[in-house]
Image 1 (cartoon, protein in one colour):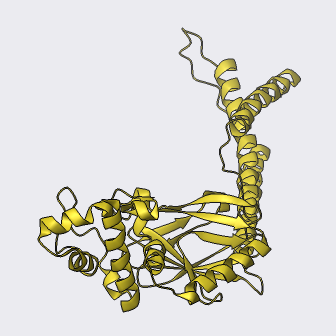
Image 2 (cartoon, helix red, strand yellow):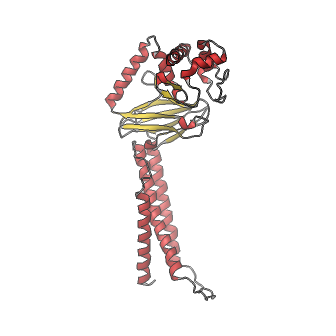
Image 3 (tube, helix red, strand yellow):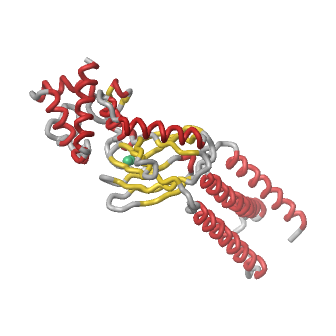
Length: 340
Ligand code: CUA
């Protein structure tokens, strides 16, 4: 090949490579990372991207160069000269991609394996997904339960996922990891948070009418703050206490607020009926308020408020322990009366 052609090809490849690199770098394609796993996934992503940009630049340069230099003239109907391939080139474009693709597979396998490592002392978190809420339980912290996920920074958290009704999927973009929650089985995923902050938890499997609002929040906090939260929350649970605090805890822990509006709980869900209007609904149903609220929890399709579809409210709240169910009914009756 002539020297001039090599210089032109190289220039073309550099221009295409430069433009493609700009497209890869200038818009921010990936969320900022907040876990060790996400950092490794990002590394894999960029490793593959750099290789792809290089190959793309070479292929496009050859394509553009060929179209430009070897165009037929307007009246040229002759056949091209018969050329037998080029053994050296053919070996090159077989061996180099083989090495590159194999290296991508090796890098990915290492990242997958390392991302699944939990270390010897992971923080265990049981995740329960149901239409349309997340619940997080810490089995080693006296079964502490919350619908906001709190994690100490720097400690691997091992999540065990369950689904009570249909497929859901647990996803925090900043953590990089994503895992389905599947009815009838458990799935696992590990996250080691490495940046303090508050990030969204998103259900990323279409799971029904409230899928889009099936969201929660994860707070990555310093280790001592996490310990303080655990001991404070543990006392609140143990302390019991009368009033409506227990009922509010049941409301919050079961994620009722993701579907229902209730001023007393600062919830603004719109999937199900507005619970501040419970007294009106009870009147329409022709039932005493307390009985109506109880029935609507354990047998949600007994009375369907106009404008809301049936078979959306999960039926599994009927299996709440009796003291929790009673507390929840009491709380809803008191709050909805208060809202009037
Ligand atoms: Cu749960 Cu989408």
